[in-house]
Structure formats: structure tokens, C-alpha cells
Length: 327
Image 1 (cartoon, rainbow, N blue to C red):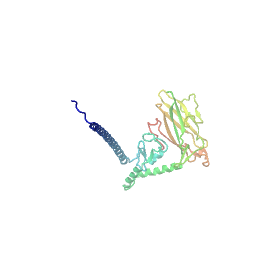
Image 2: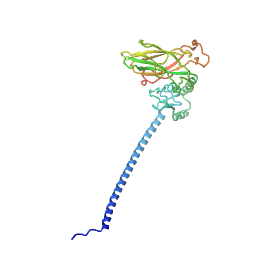
Image 3: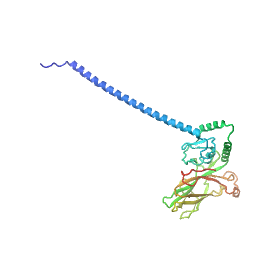
Image 4: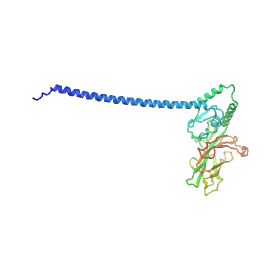
């Protein structure tokens, strides 16, 4: 006898129950996946937070070491006052060394690291800490007093002085047996060429340099004197021979515009490895030197010899030894 089939309603209830079970399992699977993803995200956030906390701890520890161990200028080793810290290399300079170097040269005078705009700033925290240290002393150290007095004298001298910056050096000539010696006047961001006082800039209104001549080497088939820039950046460039030992020696003589009463300046360039390099020199005009519109012009004989105070970096390539600056 054939078995009787279940009623239609019973079959539908069974199918609905089976479908509901499948949906519940799918929902539980989705919930577990979401929970696992959430826990994984929490783990990532925790790891990121731990990394940030560790980095902050190391930075704080490094900063504490900077503040507790930095007692002298990194360049002159004199007691610090009003310290300036270089953002990249973290070297700290006293005001005298700032006046002599980074005020004119875009590199650290200690390690030759390049300086970007805005990377030189007073370390106010260290300055405050140094003042607190000095205030605990019964009397200010004589060395510190003398250094402060010298710093004030240097600042006053700059306020009275008129200075310009020259850049000179060697660039490769494209072949092993040639190079190019160059010199140029470094302009400020606003195009002016002279630096006078704290921040005022004066534009001469013409070329400060009348001519540049080459000497001190065996002259080849090239122009030994230039009366106008002939290279990029307003530079005066001269091809010079390179010896078999890769040595380059030459002398550039800069003659100034006749309206600038200064004697010629000689720049002696020497490198023993033939590698490119560039240096900067700060030229301080004599107090009697007159710029057009600046008053009566003295007779050249009254300017004294030599009338220029120049300070330049050492001759090896840039980065091998920093620019010394003024003094």
C-alpha cells in the first residue's frame, strides 16, 4: 500500500524552517566576520598608537638630552647664550657664530649640512634653560661676560656695515682635462645685492662688478677677462686646464664698478682632486666706500690698503668642510 504524502501545509512549514536555519547561519557568519574585522582594526590602531608613543618617547628623550648636554656653541665651544638651533642637523650656535656664518651661508658651519629657508631659529626652551642655569651662579663667568660683549660688538658692527656676498668655485667642463672657474654676486630673494644693517637691503642699481680676469694658470685659447656675466646665475666663468694629477689652480681678480670705491679683490682657487666645489665670501665694504646716492665719494687713496674684509670657506669641495664665515 502506498504511503500517504504529508499535507501541503506541512511541506511548506518544513521548507520554511530549513530556509530560516540557513539564514541564521549566514547572519552568524557575517557577524563573526565583522567582529573579526573590528578586532583586527583595533589591533592595528593599538599597534599604531604604540609606535607613535614609542616615537614620541624617543623624541622627548632626545630633546631632554639636547637640553641637558648642550652647554657650549657647536662651532666656537664658548658658553651658550641666546642659542640658535639648526633644524636639520640640530647643531646649536651662539649669536656670534650665527652672525659670521648662517646669516650669509646656506649651510651648517659645523657639518656642512644644507640649510633650507626657515631652518634657522632661536631655541627658546634652551635659551630659557641656560638663563636659569646662569641665574643659579653667584657671579656670571668671565668667559660668558666677554663672549656676550663680543656678540654685542659684532651686532653693532653689522648694523653699521655694508656687505655683499660672492660665490666662487669650480664646475666640471665636460671632459677630464677641463673645468670652469666662476665667481658671481649672490643676490637676495628680492634681487638686491647689498646687505646693510639688520634687515634693510640696498640695490646698487647697476652691476657692482666691472670686470673679472683670470690669472695664475697657463692661459689657453679663451678670453682672459670678462666685463659681463657669461654663465647661469649671473656668473663670470672661465675655462681652466686640469693637470694630469687632477689639480686645478687659478686666480680670479674682481674689479669693481668705478662708482664703488674699492680696490680689486683676488680670489685664489685651488683643488687637488678636480672635483667641483663652491664657496662663499662675505665682502665688507670700507666705511669710506660710497654707493651712488650715498653721499660724497672719498678719494681712492684714502680708503687704505686693502680696503676689503673678506672671509671665505676653505677650498675643498662643498660638504667636505664647512664654510668658516667671518672671523
